Amino acid sequence: DTEVTQTPKHLVMGMTNKKSLKCEQHMGHRAMYWYKQKAKKPPELMFVYSYEKLSINESVPSRFSPECPNSSLLNLHLHALQPEDSALYLCASSQVVLRGQILNVAEQFFGPGTRLTVL
Amino acid sequence: KQEVTQIPAALSVPEGENLVLNCSFTDSAIYNLQWFRQDPGKGLTSLLLIQSSQREQTSGRLNASLDKSSGRSTLYIAASQPGDSATYLCAVRKAGTALIFGKGTTLSVSS
Image (cartoon, rainbow over all chains, first blue to last red; front, side, top):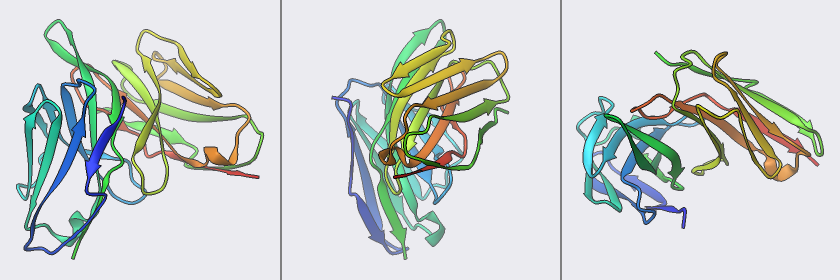
């Protein structure tokens, strides 16, 4: 099973709403990622979790709050978003390989994404 | 800072043609390189992963090569089909870091 699932597929929310995006994988991967992708642009990294700990935060505004409750699940909590936050939000996962002191990652698998519209 | 460039930005070919997509990166100290396919509004599908020690990888009609010293990778698609129409993204990773993507090549194969 090389599948990463994301729910919901589509989400429309107002600027005062609180919502959550969910991501799940059962491949035993210990690295999970959130990306944001605007139309006709490549994905932009937001967060990386390695062994359920936040390892990279690409200076993302605090209105986006990630959570990794266990090794299979990754959430992205949304609050007080702006219309410019409308985008496709992609989750990904990969295995982690220890090489000396550096944690390297192998092939990365992406989910189908959540299309978010902020009104 | 690593930069990844993909040429051409868009490509239109008739069905049956063999074609090459190009990817270049500025820092040759990469851990691996991954090619993805993305259909409009969908997630990314991993096509091929090449480790820094490898020269090429093949999967079906796809062949990806890597020349780390010159900072280049190519994705070769044999006997193209309309179903191959999509955006193809190249991404590189340095040790201990996340993927850095190129802007992609949008391929259109006409029947």
